[in-house]
Image (cartoon, rainbow, N blue to C red; front, side, top):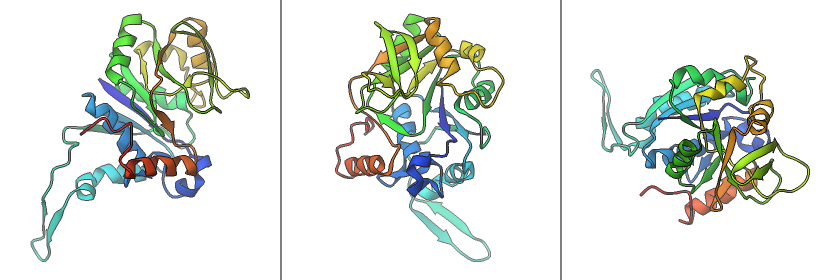
Length: 259
């Protein structure tokens, strides 16, 4: 089962870090935020990743092309017969990573649409490259398969300033991205989608998934909420990056569900 991760946004509110690299590559505890998100999925056995690149996508390509070099102890032999010996094997052995250029100006719905040909006909995970959580992804998938709707998102309770979900039990009846008033549950990402989501995306790269597509899914009862009251934290600002970095370095990172 594949995992699609949005990695192409500008990250303007984190300009201190994103002037030179895409937001998913901003480090937390010495590793890119993207690595932390991928580890969350890999720990549950989901190791087939599709990364939707855009702004400074070459940074992400370089990172994975040189992954073994960047993460291992090495010995170099120089001269006419150079050689490299790697002394360690990364825990990420077996990951499959598709690096998909989805355009510098493409919006979230357009990036998702461009990823669909690489997915096949099965359900798939879909999330953003700027948040971590301790949600049970396997339970999210089980919930999605049980209700049979097109889309499931993880509904979380942060400290305000995000989009609001109107809910009837576990069915989302209305979706409003970033309203002015405070809210209870918000869209935390970590979604599971059915291939039928293609019917809601149109053909325009400017389609924002969190607007017309999600609004239509909610209006038709095809958007469900897996409510998670545990840990969730995005990395929208430098302050939030510093918070996550400090949590990791102090050994109190709730999203670290791997050994």
